[in-house]
Structures are given as C-alpha cells and as structure tokens.
Amino acid sequence: MNFWDKITGNDMKKEMKAFEARVHKLPADYQAAWKEINVHLWPHTDFTGRNLMPIFDGVLGLLEETAADGQSVQEVLGDDIKGFCSALAGNEGAKSYRDKWRKQLNDNIAKKLGK
Image (spheres, rainbow, N blue to C red):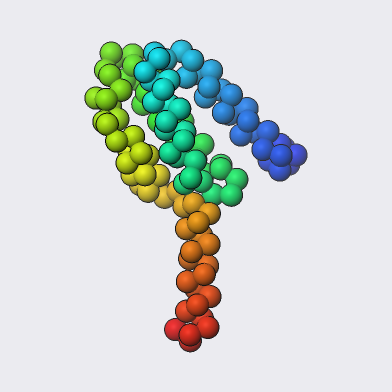
C-alpha cells in the first residue's frame, strides 16, 4: 500500500468493494444480516476505520461458511445482531473514537486533580 492510498483511504475502499462482491454471492437473508452488521460495527471504529477491516473479514468468512453449511442467519448470529456486534468489537479490542476521547478527558481531569 502506498502512502497516497493510505492517506485517502483508497485501500479501504478497495477492501470494502471486495467484501461487497463476496456478500452478493450470499443468500438474501445473509445479505440483510451483513447490512445490519455494518450498521452496528461502524460505531466501534477508530478515526480511520482500519481497525474494523479484520473484524469484517472474519464475520464475512463466518457468514460464508455457515451459508455453505445451510444454516440460517438466526442460528449463527441469534436475534440480537447489535449485541453480537458489540461483543465482537469488544472481544477484538476495537476502541471507538468516543472511548479514546473519554479516556483522554478522564486522564486530563485526573491530572488536574493531582491523582
């Protein structure tokens, strides 16, 4: 990856297009679940979003395997996709920009208070 692609995010655009091409091969209910997963995972991103690319790849791999096995989306993800995404992002250590700002604010307050 060259410097320009990293700065502009072209590398991530290419990766997301590759993910979308893989998603179009899945059944319709899996495609709907992927859209919902995207909605719920993006709030866990850092400023660039690069921290979510391995998570997206892993989730898409899981969806592809289970679709090939003939399982339903509900069997794989359950009924709470938002909870699944929160647990997944938490387990992978994906910190959102809000988490970083909260930590920075808490550190500054503790420093001002002399703790």
